[in-house]
Length: 127
Length: 320
Image (cartoon, rainbow over all chains, first blue to last red; front, side, top):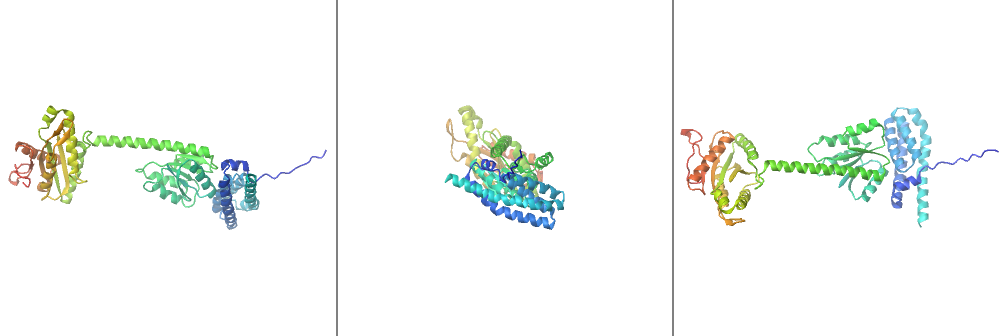
């Protein structure tokens, strides 16, 4: 019998973990989403610019900030990627950092929509 | 308890603030190390700090080192927040002066527990400082009257005399002794005697300036030092101070008692350079003359050039 492979895309944000972290406080969750909506594009853009400029110390610093931010949001996969980029930047591995950027940016791009979707769902359940 | 939160990353900062708001902390929140340094190093700044390790301008380690340079300020308990987990990083953090560290993302209960541990350390430090201050006070003050004791006033007088010689100022040294104090103790009891000593101390302190010294030199003897005084008016000032003792009866457990003081006064401007002990010896000799003259009066120690320093004139009035 032919085996059926079902590919399930892992969630960008571990929502259970995030809700536990905010103490299931919807208001706080909304605030965090708002901050992320504002800060994440800015940090992503700065990371891209530093990578293009080959400024690895700046890349390491921004990746470190992103790692902390994403960990707090339970965006664990993207946080792990940020950590890897930070390490590569510290090792001055310019090519590897550049190579990883596209994937990382794609991961970052899923964070806000996923947070917004969870938020909308939470609000729908409560209304 | 007021706590400083220094965190440049907004999500982490918001989560910290919310957690500590719920725990009832008062917070000062900054987003970089330079601001954290300023807050922690200013007078009355927070004594509990949560510092992110990696911050722009000045990182958490540098803030720790800066705060620890100030050894004469109250202790600041510092918890470093870090995504770094290697043993080398932890050692570097603690070596820079942090007391504890917490890895991000933090767990709210762990954060609160670590801060409570910090508060226990600060409370302990406060108690130690309080105990040390109390011991220092006891070592420098007379327990009955709360006046400076003999040891400390000798030290202060030595310094004041050196200063007045250097600046060519006048210091007035008045030795006062309560008249017939023994009979107060004998006739009215030691509790009444203690009441008298306490009230005399209060009257003396109340009649001098904040930068003058009053000491219980021993038993019923008091030393009053008027720093940087005018040599012309100082004898009248000293006599006024002496007269406050007998101005009105002193209320004691044995009822009101009339008490007087005899005093010997020396103005340093009238003497050459003398050691502290010599100055006290001359003032004491003048006090002896006041006692001999019938008590309840003041006599001045005045050097006679022909006979050399140390000869006391039995002056009959305060202006010598």
